[in-house]
Length: 137
Image 1 (tube, rainbow, N blue to C red):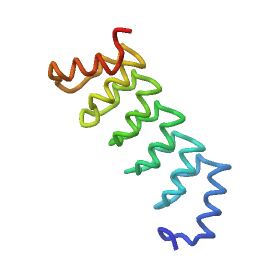
Image 2 (tube, rainbow, N blue to C red):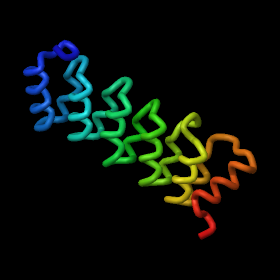
Image 3 (cartoon, rainbow, N blue to C red):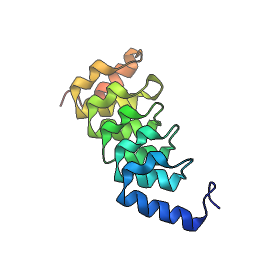
């Protein structure tokens, strides 16, 4: 048994999700494997998962960075993946994930991301961001 599902039953549901990912919302208490399959096949399924694990979040955001918009509490690694691909997504990175590294990557990818910094920065942090993001190429 895995999360109330037999291994055979879980495999059948995963096969069904690969063919019909929009049926994900009908599954009660899906396993992490089911969640990963669902968001891989249809990234918008991330909206159906109450507290997705880091692995599930990455499965949705890595191929489709804008899915970070639908995650209430993204993990720092997920935020980094999103802003490396589209810096402007810093807008959807919560303050607790806005580290110097994440901000630098966002600005490196898109200098306009600077407008979405939500945390106060010291002069040293500002200098580090400018250096890390190669803002003065």
